[in-house]
Length: 614
Image (cartoon, rainbow, N blue to C red; front, side, top):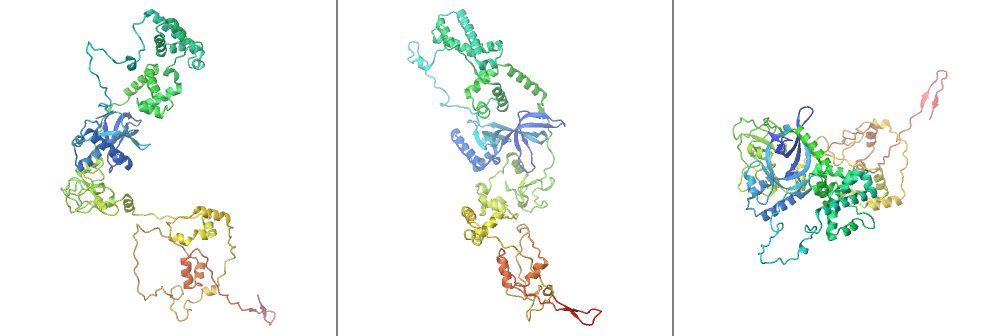
């Protein structure tokens, strides 16, 4: 049975650790399901490395101040798994994802940290994490004990001793009950002060807008701020009614006294109610996020005056009605479905490591045991790491392994036959974050850098500045882009000559026999073998095969019939030069085709032949 206010485990992934949340509300949806509005708590693995360093510094300060007993390295490692960070982030999760209860408490100076390790499902927090600003702040609920916060009470004076302290420096007298005025006289003066306050509001333009009726002005003038001003006036004038009357109504006009309830506008009051609904009585956050133009004292005074209004009573009744309509508790049965990360059947023999797809002889990545009734896959599938049953439960609840790995600075106490993958990575040269990123990036995707028209124009105009050949050999060297822009703007652009018609190809030459190269052995394309080319009888050199994962996507250029015909007119040196410098144009000298012979045409009417020439 789960109730509002309980700390529970939520499962959002079969392989990741549980989420720890606090139930704020239980709501029933339209389709009959139950959703829980929860407060998010974060683990150390959920925050950045910089914030982890800040949390470590806070933990060291706490240990020094509270004088904690010394702990082993493994205890310090496991204690980090028990630390949580509170937040003000809310989210809604289905109640069917609840996997159990846990206990979360605010860390106190009197607590012993090792006591959290002795209790199951027990966590603590001392810092508040802001997921938006990415900051860690100390929680406000600390117990302030010590000479910094408690006053030192002096000893009691004897009856014969007199108090030598100057009372005017220690306190200020605001009212003397032993004055010469009687109670009816004081009451009459207070009535006059209220009447003066009502008249002052009638003269003030802003007050006439806020209190358009006489009853509202009289009610505002009867508030405590008017009575406090009247009694303070009597005290300052030595309880002389004549002098006090003249002080209430000076020459400039009657004195108008307003409190925070009158000073605040209706829109500011609505902002305050919205902030109070979000943050509760955290007046620092209310002022910082909603009312930054108000002082903290003004916000606190308005809160206590707002609690005396009908608005507060109305909202309190509405909240009570909503609380009665909401669910107080919900029953979630125990989750018994098998985890998809299981790699062996529950009924298998203890110590059986021969699960399908996993190598034999692998041990637990956490406790390094080789025998367990149940094994679970952990980590990336290609690494084939596994955890035993107890370490898997620890991983799901606490979000870490029982023992620190090589990457976390731990050293192995005893030699073992099997080393975990993390230990191997820790001993490899890829122990840095950049090296691990290279190690994990196995399958690389190919990418293409496509140049723009302006870049191609700059390459031709600014050849002396760019030096494209040198830049290709040294891609890490920077190029002065400002100089290129300046040169491009000053230098005239050399336009290409327009291309003429395509060079005709003599089909008689294309169809010539391929064995026309006198005495030389010919390849399959009709060209004689040159240096670097082998015949069919030569030995085949085996090339190194590239793995499918590391090989880039192939790029195929299909040659046309005209291109293949033009290649036959290039020498081997020209072909190599064109391959090394594909950006340069290729000049081809085509042989002049022979002129065709005149064709005689014999007409039927005459016997003389007629020759047609071009």
